[in-house]
Image (cartoon, rainbow, N blue to C red; front, side, top):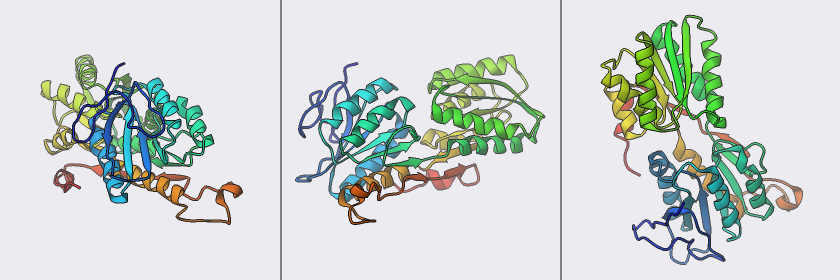
Length: 335
């Protein structure tokens, strides 16, 4: 995959990292909020860096944090959902010795390279989904079991405990499988709810819409749909609207992009389980900064004592967004 770096000023540069000690290639940089003369650089490494959810929440907050702290921040990773490419990016960035790494916990496979970063003495924080098999300094993110449980409770309430439902997301992804488990555990208490299938929409709107259309054809009495990735909701809503079943087929899903919020306002989606992505990005970056600056010393030498002087795990919680409160999120001021 050949990709290029893009600066905030939308200047297209060569396919390499801004100089630190070495350079890397084969990744896409979507933000480089350099501050003139800033001695520190903090790097966010994710995958699918152009995904609107990441751009609007994670990356915007990370840039804002960097500006407020007067440090340089960069955001790196492949344009597509490509975990091996993310691993390669982390490998290459380790050699450039940034002040800290903020890594999206996309897959357990990134655990060994996180360990390499920690072994190299680079403060490393994981966000979004934990990589518990790694030596990361801290994790901040959402309890995905709770996402599934929240959707299950809401769906049971919407259906009065009876009806056919289906759910979809990215199958095999650790956090989503945890979410699926939370949903199923709730539904065990409602024998009147019949789950007709679990589907892989590959985080693709068109695929989610296709699956939904097929489900509506195969099950004309389908009563509910639960979504677990950012594109599940818009895809399900598209097919339900085309079938003229909006409001009849209840939809719960994750995330709260403008499209999701508008669909709630229209009554097509009944509930959003929203992650507080700004929190795990902002505080994850701040944890790195506090590690570098030893903001809180817990001993004469925390490193010698084997102490991590920041919280090791933070659950940032969830937002429950319905038609009753959706305008509060639509009218949220720009930060």
